[in-house]
Image 1 (cartoon, rainbow over the protein chains, first blue to last red):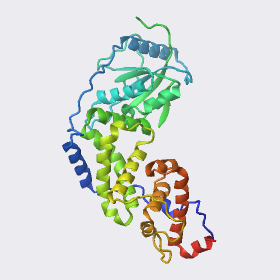
Image 2 (image 1 turned 135 degrees about the vertical axis):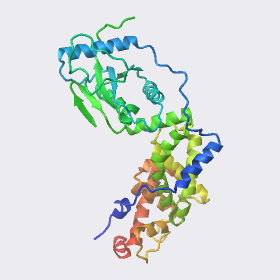
Image 3 (image 1 turned 90 degrees about the horizontal axis):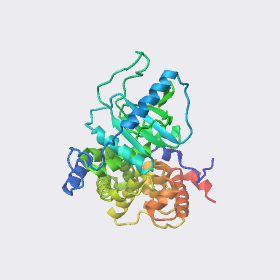
Image 4 (image 1 turned 30 degrees about the vertical axis):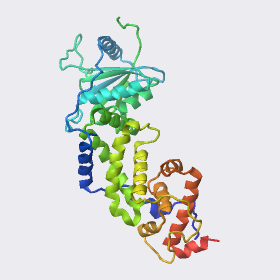
Length: 187
Length: 191
């Protein structure tokens, strides 16, 4: 049987591509970086220069759109056009790592904004109330703890942004909804 | 994983690699927090260490030192990283350079097109021993391409050669390895 030099050697491609380095290396690298002032302790600084914008208008639009469609029993649909998309944050992400959630989510928003897309968002408070006719099918898996509204080229792109969100990464759940512009934004 | 709930799409998924990496790096550069750095370190060190061991061949006991030096350089250079490649590829390039500089010898050099260059086809060796016997340049190309899955474009960038050189050296490296591993069958291939 002849061999083809253009093809890899089968055993070669099965060699391990990962190996555990000695644990001491991790400690030594951290010690060197600390000594050189390239990293600092575990206390994480709060971000500066970026504040959650005033989003009352966006919240009104979001609540209006969500309630309107739920009330009408809208049919499932997927938007392929540019527009705004709401990312509703449900559940509690993993808290074990001591991560500053506001900072993490702000970093995500900055990355979205750096691609030229509009993004805004807010954390929701713990108080909630159902107003109007009481229904049992409105709450979904839980009440959302926060939301973002982003500009995206399509529903699929909005889903991609949601996939990269630290809330989804760390065990939370994100519901993606297209925002239909109704012209009801208050000024 | 993406599922549908009513007229909504629910995302509860493993993260997109690009955004995950970029967010992690930008977060670290903003805070310089040890925990942020260690998250990046833990995600890539096993691959970097394996690459260093493969590249160093018989001198793989130095892989830990190469890994440490690679990370020190990475953190120093990270603010200038332009995301023209994946973070993993960039880090592997640092490993390659550290291996080369550590031993003050070119890890890649033009080698004669000879089956005797760096191999001993009289032996029937196991794969690791055969890799160890390859000249550093051949070993680098075959390890980066066939073991770690880098493209010729990526290898060319790491080693400072053009893609054609990377391809031709891979061809020769495979032939040398086959000759070392199975001398009898390899001889039949050589006109």
